[in-house]
View 1 (tube, rainbow, N blue to C red):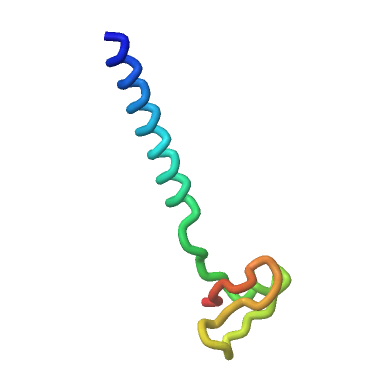
View 2 (view 1 turned 120 degrees about the vertical axis):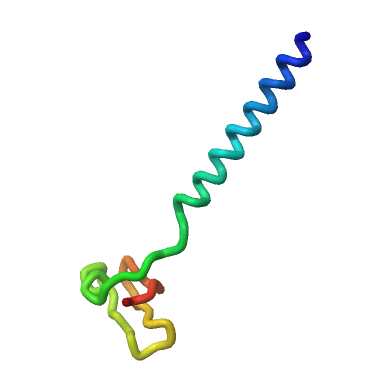
Length: 66
């Protein structure tokens, strides 16, 4: 009987830990696009002449400018 309780507690702990990991993974997600003004305000330069239209430098470095 005691083994069943220990096993059930271990399974429940593993399940909750798994949910915590998947929640953290989905919370980050992919970086979103920034506007040209957001790029400038963050200290970067919107380079729409480069492939992928990146924001170069600053807080949004490497993110796409929409």
